[in-house]
Amino acid sequence: MGIITVLWEKWTEFKRDFYKITLAAMISPLMYLLIFGLGIQTTSHGEPYMNFLIPGIVAMSTMTGSFSAVAQNMSVQRLYEKALDQVMVSPTPLWQFVLGQIIGGCLRGMYAAGIILLMTMPVRTGLIFNGWSFFIMFLNGTVFSTIALALSFFAKSYTDAPRYNAYIIVPMSFICNIFFSLDQMPNGFRQVVSLLPLSQASGMIREISVGGSPTLFGVVILFVYIAVFLSISVVFIYQKKNL
Image 1 (cartoon, one colour):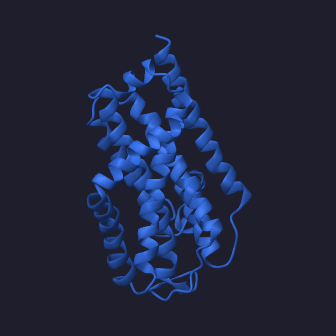
Image 2 (image 1 turned 180 degrees about the vertical axis):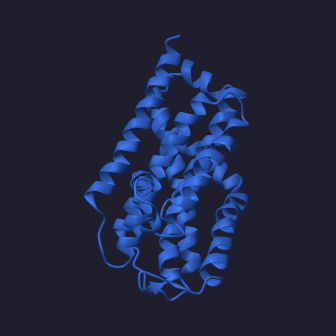
């Protein structure tokens, strides 16, 4: 019941800010597609660069949509609206509150990715997006919702959320297999970047888009990130309750 309550709150927020959320999900990816996809007439791995770019933009959209839906909102609710304190004294199981926040953020990321897929449908690329694609999008959104929730619990002010975006989301957007292949990176650095969740998600979505399937290693990596940051969130919220 607690999960449904949190999701209902997210749904109410989504309906209220529908146009703002939709425009925010469209503008940056659209600029990347126009500038890099149409402005750079080249190939990647023997395919048109647009075929390489679109799956990466889809993965990036699930990341930014999920992260932004949780980080800023949860930081403000916890620090200024004291919503977390109200949850503490309510009969709502805390684990349900945590899962509701994560699922809500993930769904927002899926919505952002869906917009990109609709926008790129007129472009005849021959790319494939199927159930496996949406499964990886869901995992990727869950990863970054979980990361955002954990970081929002440690935020000292509402200005920390934009800093997290600058420290985490922006660097990943440019180095994690979105705009260029990891093969072009130097040894050592390439192996580290390949273990980041966005690198795995974008690589698997790109592989699926050409008729392949996700790798077990990549799926395990995403589940590891979810488990680590979910544990951090649960430990934090239960420790706070016991103070």
